[in-house]
View 1 (spheres, rainbow, N blue to C red):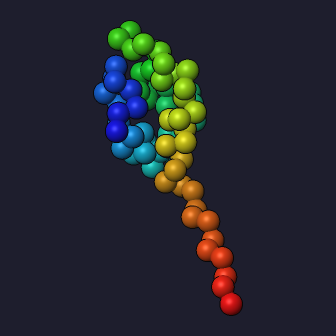
View 2 (view 1 turned 60 degrees about the vertical axis):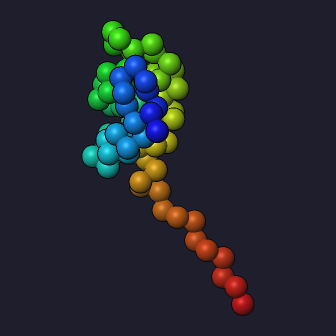
Length: 68
């Protein structure tokens, strides 16, 4: 799914950046050129969504409950 139509950035693009260690808001803005000419700026205002996508690969799944 696209997360930025202006730049054509997809969720996969952001996750790939996260796997490469780009997870901080300033890093993501620089990597994808958010708020540069040709971009409406909405993505930069909602940068937390990019951070969540970028770090989603690094989260451990919640432990499953033990049943007895």
